[in-house]
Each structure stands twice: as structure tokens, then as C-alpha cells.
Amino acid sequence: MVSAIQAALDSWSLRWPLTLFLLAMALGDLRGWLRLRRAFPSAIPAWQLGAFMAGLASLWIAVGSPLVVFDDELLTVHMIQHVMLMAVAPALILLGAPAMLFLHGLPQVLVRSILGPALRWQPLQKFGHALTHPAIGWLSAMGALIAWHVPTLFELGLRSEFWHRVEHASFFATGLLFWWPVVQPWPSAARWPRWRIPLYLFMATLPCDVLSAFLAFCDRVVYPSYLSLPQRFNLSPLQDQECAGALMWFCATVIYLIAAVVITIQILSPGVANEAQQAPAKMRSSQVLGLSRSASAAVSGHVAAAAKVAR
Image 1: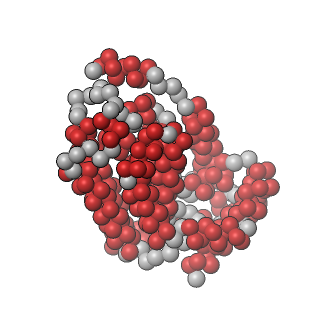
Image 2: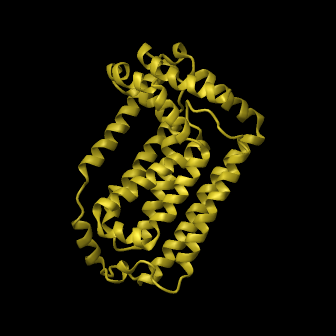
Image 3: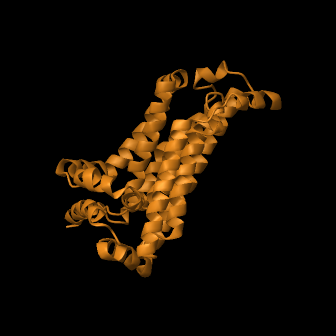
């Protein structure tokens, strides 16, 4: 078995376009964080930068690391990818205040000439306002989860590299939409009362529970492709499927529960709530943050939209 696994790993090659893109994102946001740190040391804590970097690392592990060698052979590995793309990477990236770091990390000529006007464009703001509604985030994430685990679509992803990438992209994109109202990254405004978010997270566990229970307790292999693949591990296809279902249930329960507990503590802690309310006001001050005029113009459009929503 070890030799077979080693042979599979030897076939892995680094996905340079993805890796270079993620490295560029990491370096750009590090540059933005350092610029902010010099101007206003308390604007973005180091833990938020760490969360962003961990989110990028999770994304690379899911779709760029040697893990991808086995995603067509083990449903459990495939499920690890899905969890990281939907629940881990999006949440960590949004926790890292990506908009603020992004605006400061990019060359200012790009912000001034392209990004600023784009962010102030009313149709784009309206589209973003509609897209980040909690109902859209919940429905899109749960829809993608269920649809891609229907055997016909799942098998399509196994047979076609193109559709496999579409599957992963849809998981990550809908994961961002799902976690947006939970994390509420700057400069967005809350669309629902905060007390609804733990319920929002609880409702998200229900489709995951149903799907994971079906995979764990089904007495047949749901995805036939795994029956014809080489068995490099001491797991039968049915045992692999049971492990995948148990993994989905455990990860979804733990991740959503942790997020719900943190938000509940924030709601019940007046000090934390006041700090959260004061943070956006601090971020609106361009002089305090040391924003250039071009970056301020780009940010002002988002702040204006957020203020409009809050009213």
C-alpha cells in the first residue's frame, strides 16, 4: 500500500498558476497590512492577518496540494476538500478583513484608475447588496452542497476535470456568500439582527446532517466510480463512504457550533458589542487609517452603501 501511495504522490505536480495567484494575494495583503500598521497600529490586529493567510493556505491545501491526487480515489478526501472550500477557507478569509487589506496592498494607480470608479458604480453596488443578503447566502450554499452530491453531477465532476473545477469554484464562492453575514466583514452593514445568525447557522446544519446520514448509513455505494478505482488504502468503497459521511457531520456540526457560540457570546457581552459598533466608525476615518485619497474614494463608495443599508 505504501508503495502505491508513493507512486500516486510522485504523479503530483505543483499547480503553478493557482499557487502563484495565492502567493500574490498573500504578499499583496501583507503589504496592505504593513501600510495600515504604520498609519494606525490598532486598525487590523495581527490575528486577522493570520486568519487571512490561514484561509489562503486552506484553499491551497484543498485544490493545490498533494491531497488532490487522492480526491478521485477516496470520497473521504473529496469530502475534506468540500469542507475546506465551503466552511474553512471562506470563513478565515473573511475574518481577515480582506477589503481593507486589499485596498491598501494594491498599487494606488490601480485603485485610483480602476478599482475606485468600479466600487462607486451604482449597478455594482446594488448587485453586491442583493448578492450578500443572508437568504441568498444560505440558499446558494445549501443548494450547491446538495446539487453537487447528487450522483449524476458528482460523477460528472469525477469524469471531467473542467466540471471538477467548476464544482470546487462553486463551493468556494457560495461559501463566501454563506459566511458573509456571519463574519460581517468591513465595510458591509448587517442585514439581519445579530440574534438571527445562530439560528441561520443551526439551519445550515440540517441539510448537512441529512446528507451525511444518507452517506454514512446507506447500504450501497452511492457513487459507482469509486467501485472501479484502485484500492490503495485499507478501506472498501462502502467504508470510505461511511467515513466521508461521518466527516461531513462532525465538521459541519463543530464549525457551525463554534461560530454560533462566538456570536452568542458577542450578543450577550455588552463590551464586545460596543467594540464591534465602534470599529466601523474608526474605519470610516481616512486620516486615522492613513488612506491615500484614491483609496479613500474607493472605500467611500462602500461605506456610503453600507450606511444606506443601515438606515
